[in-house]
Length: 187
Image 1 (tube, rainbow, N blue to C red):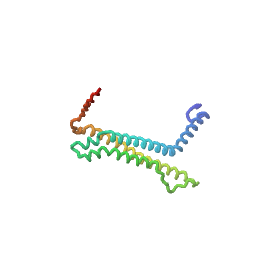
Image 2 (tube, rainbow, N blue to C red):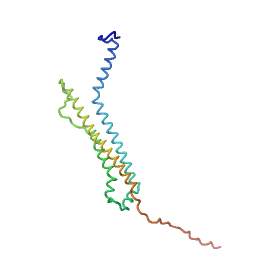
Image 3 (tube, rainbow, N blue to C red):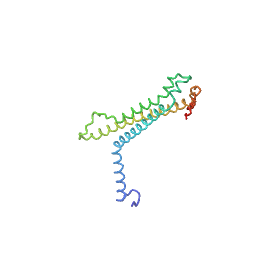
Image 4 (cartoon, one colour):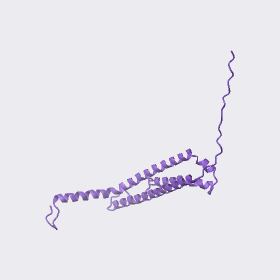
């Protein structure tokens, strides 16, 4: 134990401090590798969310009467502009998918030789890992930005869909089937 100011640590305290220093050194050394793995995992999640949203959105188009509703109305905006509003989220998702897949695109990094044994070789490798992580983060941010933009466009499309007037419908035709009496059997 410490007896007074200016005196050193006892062996137990030194072991604790050394253990903490070793732990944080290990974290420092593993961080570049874990950063790239985490960015790739995040890109996988963005790809999964984007693909699911595209499938859901297309299913809504297929099972809705939006085509009939847009074809049968006369509104402030021309019909083709309304279609663009409804299709813009799909374009955002495709762009988001493009950027998210760029996170996985392997790239040759010139100037790095993993077999080099010079004193500064580790610094070159570390710099390349940092550059790769920054590049992957940039692609992931672009992907995320387009995904968020698609949410804004979806909100706009939903508001527009709610505000669209219903197409005029004619009277519903009802078919009345009258049974034909069968002839009476003869004795």
